[in-house]
Image (tube, rainbow, N blue to C red; front, side, top):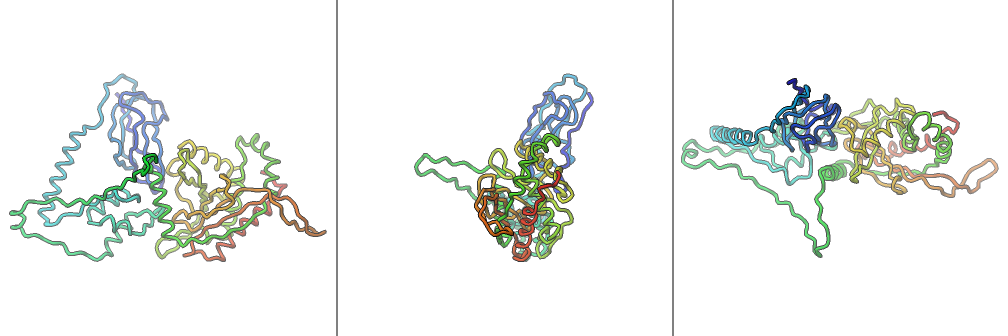
Length: 442
């Protein structure tokens, strides 16, 4: 029987592990090449892991909710096609027994060293902490309250290994009560007290209201948005833009564009093109903040907020947006949007963003005040395009006409972006849109 080891694939430069959320195939089932075998979740996105080969699933090496490292073997597939007896998943009893032995050994080691680590319960927090950070917190006795106060330097303010190690290094050392050997012999060893914070479940007063717990992604979004407001000094600038030329040009070329390029031409890539140009003009908007340091980004990677089928929000990233022409932007935008709607985004698709654009006009909003996507320093909201009466200046005099207009709402981090830069940037975006060449090719 020729065996193939299905490994957890690389999912981006900053993703080192994932949690198994569901096995789509059972032991003994046939698998086609490129067919999804299991579902995984990282702190960034949920995804599926496909099989590279066709065969029969003969062994599953991890259970649901297990954390797996990138490159680690997670299942065995028989590629000979022979019928095989289903191999059960790892013996849970043995695994538990081993865990108990390791736990007992740990307790003995703690007695010998006359000290015990503090057990930390993470269930009371809505923030995401990686398994590595949790392990370090447990080993070093960092409480959940202390952990939540750490200003994370990772994506969306996530606490990294370096952040917690720096915290441990700088915090005031607390004296540890050391018992004598005689006391340990006389008194029984006590396990660390685990203080659990009970989750208060709301109760319907009238008995008719429905109480629904947030799903995992909504909890993450909630934590990210709250932390962003606590981290950045949000300031907004608004500007109205005449996009009549863009609307007329798109109406004229959209059918021919779709026929030639095989993809639709929406307004989004046109706006992305203008934003990318403005970022090149004002590179101070293409930065991130880590502590007291400003990191100037070399690449212009624009995130585009997209709604998922379940109503949650995700931000896939257009990498090197300034290097793409309008055709390339249209294809990239449509591809990311389609895969977001079908839950097919990969972890790498939502990493590395340096600036974000959100289209609030999709839902009819005239303008909005978006929250910054940490650790970026700016986000632009595109309002709905509306026909409005406007004053039109002409050599013969001013007159009233019907124009297509929209609002741009720019939120920026006042810690590092002053009003002059934030206002000048959004004004430059408006200038690129208003001066759109109606005679241009794709």
